[in-house]
Length: 327
Image 1: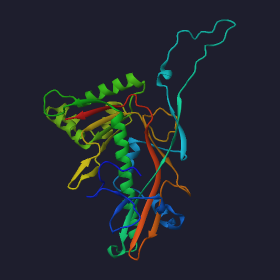
Image 2: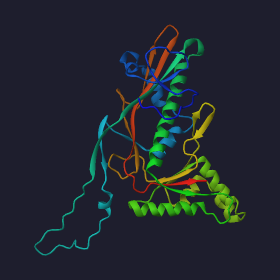
Image 3: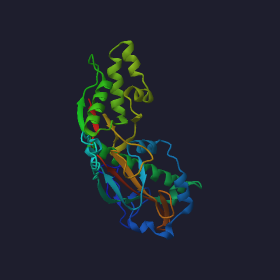
Image 4: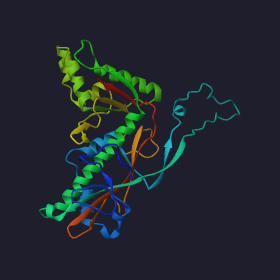
């Protein structure tokens, strides 16, 4: 399993499952021995499939990197974007001749989803009630979603063309025009105007600060726009403000998106060949569904609860991804 660069929701890094030396409360990257059929829990898997995240992590993840269901091994299309925008003046057929022939040569990329999972070591002396297994499963699911969200945001921002902007109390600032300028620049590069705008919590707050500082009716009106109203103003499908955090050190949490505004093109319910900038390819586990839960008694008092899934976040086309870093 590939570890993230920062610990997640805990004061100690997530470690590999070494097969010994367990203690209650540990969260480990699951190894293959956890995924045995003898440890499979059908009731917990059914619970996990129907589980709804109360913090809307899944909604944010789907906004950033819409899921596309594929087999374990699959192909996705790397489009030759320029071909979609070629324009001829010689498409008239001569008498007795054929029409001009053109070719579309997008590259097929062979790829595969990655098996990922987390294990929680539970001390039976520290649990109470009949639903403790469901509670631990829910904790692992939230953790997995946060991991996936961080991967998606990291991939998207790494591929973006960045511009630094200051949104503060300086007179005359117009944050929304800064975004519109980037949307136009993105369309000039890719031919497709970004339809999603992702704000970090800090960037959203700084937008309000810049407009409120104008101390006039127009500024106050702009500052008070909801995300839905701003989407209409920017002529995009949706604006989302990410307020998710992760544990970045023993005593501190960090915003997943923070002071960035990211603009890109993505759609829900697409396949492997549409022109989205980013996708999260997911594969069903054995028996169907996107997650599978295992429970293993590893000693008289210790139980391992494991959740696995298959996914891979891919930036399928880098053209037109823009980003503002706000100070």
